[in-house]
Length: 254
Image (cartoon, rainbow, N blue to C red; front, top):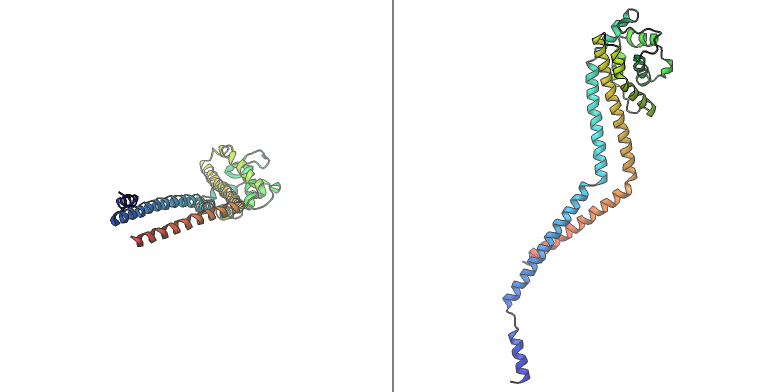
């Protein structure tokens, strides 16, 4: 056998049938599609994680939740105030110093801290000018405490100063000390407790307002991080669209 024939024979032995080529191509397309689908799933997971952990959305959602909390607290505050029988405090003062039994010279009585707080926070007046007889007449006697009640329930107190906030917290810390001095009159004691419930809400609202201010500062300071985060999401969205386009092209080939 000649060299030529021997080579020709080997070549003929290696001929691949057309149907085998077709099957191999189909298998390659299926494998490639499988890889693309896996890549698509991975990109979607990465994109979704980025969306979930988006710093801008997280801060804005926290701001929104805090604002909702303030609104709910406003409603609770007004409800409690509406149910305060302020006349329990105003009626006793019609005769001398009344049932509260506060001596005009007893400046050490802790309840004065409550009235000074009211003067500072609710009436926006420096408590250095506080005197019990004047406060009693103007707040409790003249209009039976109606103006005080309105201020407790409706006044916007979200922008009180740091010092005013500290005085509010101090007052809340001595609540028991104040109410204990009123144990002889349960009705008045209950009314004062209701007022402290309102003050507690006011304190919480102020903390929420300060939290919102800080979150807004954080949002401003994270603008560069937010921009990069959005670029990363856009990158994955682009990859996802290109992958889907490739899959549609392969579908048309099949």
